[in-house]
Length: 110
Image 1 (cartoon, one colour):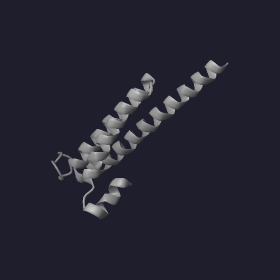
Image 2 (tube, one colour):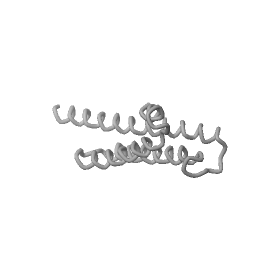
Image 3 (cartoon, rainbow, N blue to C red):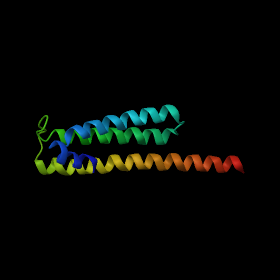
Image 4 (cartoon, rainbow, N blue to C red):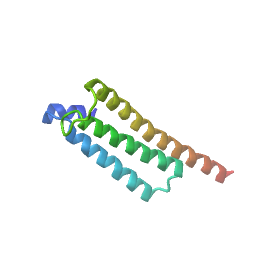
């Protein structure tokens, strides 16, 4: 909802979206450097960044920055689908990482 609120402030929501994808990529990189992530979780996080990036390209390709050769309706559906997909990847990765950490700590304490 952050980018939707930007419309009220700046009249456009593309700049916050660009900032958010940059922060997501930097966040995954920093997280992978400070925490030992399990490979499946890291792969899911980078898949989330990729889906997030494609979401941004579809959103910017509706004529704001460039024009993709698809109808407005198709672009709208693709944008929403990719936004949900990226969020699902992020949450799946965090769940998987937490599950592995808890499982290993239980195994070590037994």
